[in-house]
Length: 254
Image (cartoon, rainbow, N blue to C red):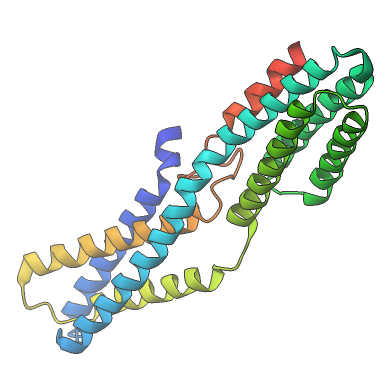
């Protein structure tokens, strides 16, 4: 049942295709098929398919990039905490090293909490990042393993970059207009299919239904890929963030 629900966009597309078929049969029966297939309708279909393919390519590109973010974040956080614990072994950096490790753990906790809540609180993240930066500065003033501090600072910059990228991919709404255009375009295509003269018999009817199914499924998938970090929702295009939660659980058990 869970698998069926997970791929409900396929069922949704199948229902739409079936509805198009039924409406097409009704339109043919009452002779409402008044739209002729010509170069004008062909050009319109080409434009719609081209537009949807562009939006789908952009969404897929962001999704493939988003898949890398959790693993990279986990690696950076793990490295930073290990370095902080290493610094805590130094006599002149014991307290700052322990505090630094604690702030790194807090940073992971904030990240996983944000993922669970399906939101991204940059202010909380920034406050914790500033605390880490202050700890690094204090250790730098004591001249404690500057090479390790250089590495930690670089990791912190990379972590901020990944955080900003995640926030943009998952929660920005700059491409909402493109999704609206896709919805309008596919709706127009389905309406035209219903009222188009079918001059190819059963083969033409089958083609109409298949195109309706495929295009509807693609548009639904585009909407789903808009936010690939939807935690706890039965969506079809989600990035696996398990590595971050597992890392947090391991640190709690240590």
